[in-house]
Length: 372
Image 1 (cartoon, rainbow, N blue to C red):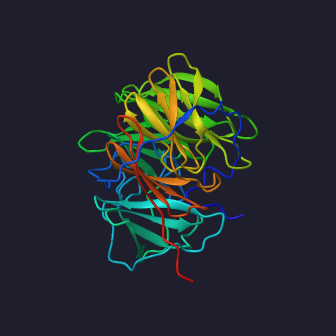
Image 2: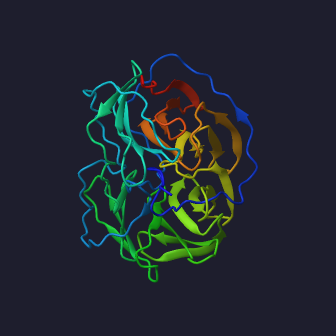
Image 3: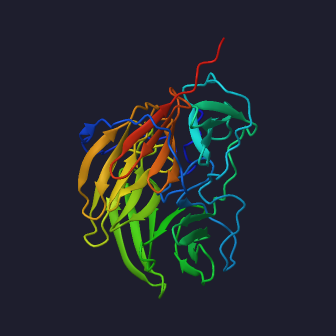
């Protein structure tokens, strides 16, 4: 079975288990005006085939400087080439996913295909006209899998250690030794909003659905807390510290299913943030903090949660219907806007969504059918 492009090497094909009841859904209001895009927004990223992930793959470097990279750390270029020929919808397999490659004020770009290669091509969408263009590059972008920039910090996975550096430079890096850790395993980690703590989550391997959560003090490098949580499967996906809670994506191994859990460091209790987020490369986005939105694996809704209190709000329906095994690609476009690109059976369909003060569909695009 060929896995779709958005699925992670760390997140094998899995089936959803132990999800909470689906929240009420309200339909968004659509606007006819074309979307605009200032700079890229903050978002919590999940692993993708391109390697853009907060579940970090181990590196071998031991230098104290932040690791160099030739592309934006989240794998999304800030320029989009619109010089290509006009494109129409390719004939794709039912196992086709999408991966985000670029976002500019005028356009977004993405590739369609499997995890290993974009065999159905890469495309740019000109937002003002709705015109899809072919891109010359036909392979997923190469992204630095060793490090992830989150806000003011660069987090790099070493062999059984995590190094945290100021993303803007000018400060010292801190290396936290993790001790016993499954060699070669990804290390899901993130820094607290105040920059003082590091959270590291690990699965226990084998058939256990329990995950271990460690909190480290970055000043002393000492471990402040260790606790266990009951996951929804045996695998740990991305981790992101959102307000007062930590998002931990927990996945099962057989069939497509990942659950975004919100873990409270104070009470050490966790709740489900939303439904299935399998195959979503960037599942969590700030709406009106402390409210965050969680994009579903089908792209059909955004779940809303107050990450300070854990309270859920009615989710917002979207006009996308990607198969959950394929997932969707989410492209941050501005502090309050995202683009969602669907996989099969709506491969290449795009929804532009304004997030604040509540998610609202701006416009939906669909690749035109090819003339046979």
